[in-house]
Image (cartoon, rainbow, N blue to C red; front, side):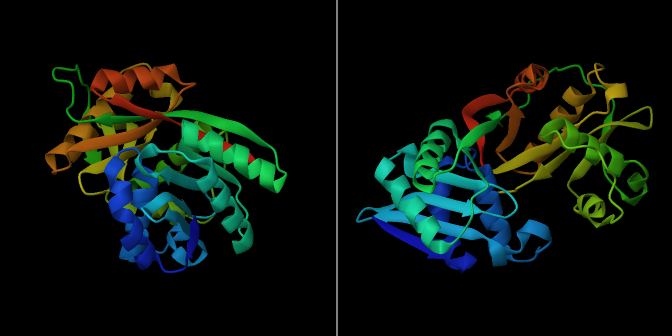
Amino acid sequence: MEFKHYDDIKLFFFDTFDILIRHESQNLIPLGNIIIGNEGTDKTGWRDTTNWFMATVSDENGINLTAVMTPPHNLTLYATDNKIDDSVLTCLVTGILESDFVIPGVMSENALAESFANTYSKICNRKYSIRKKQRIYELLQVTPNIPLVGSLRMAGEPDMSFFPYWLEGFKSDCFGLTPKIKNDMSDYRYHIASGKMYFLEDNGIPVSMAKINREMETACGISYVYTPPYFRGKGYATSCVSALSSLALNRGFTRCVLYTDLENPASNSIYQKIGYRQICDSLEIVFY
């Protein structure tokens, strides 16, 4: 087994892209990240590749395992063709230790995430716990004749009057963070200026939001789905995600991909109603 640590994103992209794209929807996050890093036009926050951890484990037949971490986010992994080998994971962990990187956690397909966590915790004498159980969904066609309300529009600068509160509400719902509006507005404006954040309006009032992200060869991600508590239970999230998914497909993507929290049955039900189908389950595991 050979562990290879990369400092050059373009070389890492060249070596791993064709492997990750075999399961494009499953690898939405690592694929989207290396595409952003390889393009190099957006270096805000975690998108600056300077501090990234990028590695592969290979044998005589090629790459067995791909690993990429974009601090402060967790390590993401892909076992080629989803074939998990404990000796490959041991090689990766040994290489991580020699590279002097600290891994705060891992997010990957269930079996791979647990196998890595077991290996990493034993070798590094650390404990771990599951932070979130997720499901990855893929949509090829929006279910026809879904009753929809409101209209979709792209976010703009005037939406800064309320968007920061919505984004912090999203983070609170998804990650359990205490809502706190930052004094620095740059992160909020980044989302607005991206041209990928959309709001659903009902009678001219914004009621729900969602964003297109991680645009790949045939797939794109749908994320930042949020409806303020006052507007929930009125079908707004269904309408917002349905309309944005249709917009993405009409632009030429053949599939839309999103992550859900398995502890939120309401959102899972909504997405399946729209036409999203399960690809695999994913775990977010943290070390301590």
